[in-house]
Image 1 (cartoon, rainbow, N blue to C red):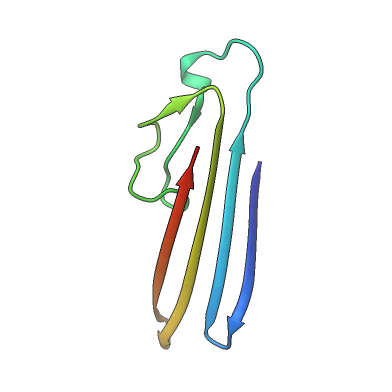
Image 2 (image 1 turned 45 degrees about the horizontal axis):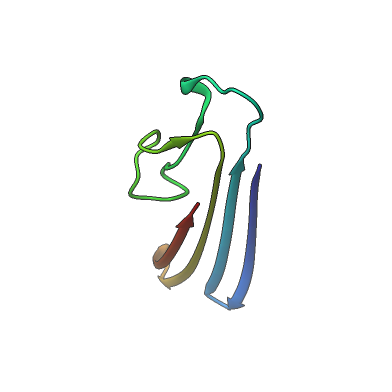
Length: 80
């Protein structure tokens, strides 16, 4: 399950709240186990570094546009 929510805080400021859940039942083969990391969620962890039967990941990000297409992001991430 992949859930995302975007809230406009100010004219050039967005709060992004993505979440991800991978829940498995029974015996799961290693290659099909839930993994953490990607370029869009839980940045800094390569995909597959951590594996388990179940995975929950949530992230909060404030995106601020500065000039034109140039912007900055403030990131907080949590994985269980």
